[in-house]
Every structure is written in C-alpha cells, then in structure tokens.
Image (cartoon, rainbow, N blue to C red; front, top):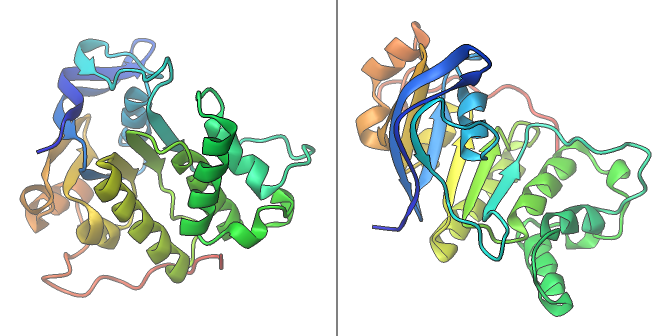
Length: 250
C-alpha cells in the first residue's frame, strides 16, 4: 500500500457563502488511479480545485502533498489551454513550461522533455508551432506539460475529451505506466464510464452535494450509477456501453 497523498475528513468546499460539497471523506495513496464521475454541475471541478489547493476546506481537514524543494508536486491537465494566441511558441517550448519553478539542471530538463515527448509520440513535432497543431495534438501537449516534471500526483480534468480512440488509448496506457513506475497518484475527472471501468483502481461518484468513494469494484455498481444518473448507463458486465461520441482526430 502506497504513501498517503491526500486525506480528507468531513471536508466541505464551496464559494463565498455557497457550499457545493460537504462531508467528503477519502484517502488517496501513491500508485492509485482515481476516476471521478458525476453529472454536469455536481461539483467535480470544485473537488479538483480542492485537490489543487485553490479552494480551502470550509470545514473538516484536507491534507495535501507537501512541497518538494518549494514546489507543489502536482501536475494539472485542464479541460482547455489558457494561453495568449499571439504568443509564438513551439510544442517543445509549450511542454517545457511544465518545468517552470523546478530546480532541475539543464541536462535533466532536456532528459525530462525528451522522455515525455517520446512516450506521447510527439518528438517529431517538438519544433513545430503550437498553433499549427490539431486539437488532439494540443491535448496531448497539455498532458505532456503536466507530466514532464514527473509529479507525485497528476490531476486531470477530462484530459481525453479531444482525442480519437487511438490517441486516447495511448494516453491512458502512458498514464497507467507512469503511475505504476513512479508510484504517482492519478486523479481523473471523466464522463466516460468505460474509461473508469478499464483503468481506475478507485472511484469517486459526485452528486447531490457529496462524494461516494472507494475501490472501483465496491463503488462502480449498477445501483450506485442509478442513484447518480437517475437513468444510469449500463455497466459493461450487464450490457454493452453505447458507442462513443465522434471525436476530433489527433
């Protein structure tokens, strides 16, 4: 069993006087892959902001991973990239932004960059303008930017939303290999039940102001999904999942 990365005890999170989530209890350890699912507006993003340290617990306690050399050991993959569209930048330069604040030597920075571009199959695009990339390539670059520092925990907000199935499989296998080799924790918000079934070790179901958490087999049940979605998607063991929505090619 890995080291504890996060520990939440009766945590409430919200904005101003408005509480979004309350009574959150969980323990996330190194080497675990957590998928967080729930309807739109249920509080998944609020929970991620808590994990990122952007929201403080209103009540309860949320233990965070301690900084390493003054830098939070967290990599973050947002839904969208917020970058000035007039900024001339190559893919390699964009990914290297993930190393800002680290104390790596120049040689170590080059090695980290080379490694992450290789595992996400982007090395031939390193010198290409970021703005000429396809949507799927940009999404893989976002993931590479978070992964390049080899963080202790990787927090991801629907990171496969712009990927075709081939690129999606590549990313998910890369993340699985990373968390296994580096004993990192992966926290993954998704609407894709099939991905949670296939890759998650643990699941958090976010709905009605709370979070139901635990090992995948204990939490990802048909009864819980019916409570979560009212008209639940069927688990693969019971019936085939609906075909995925069309995705932009990577």
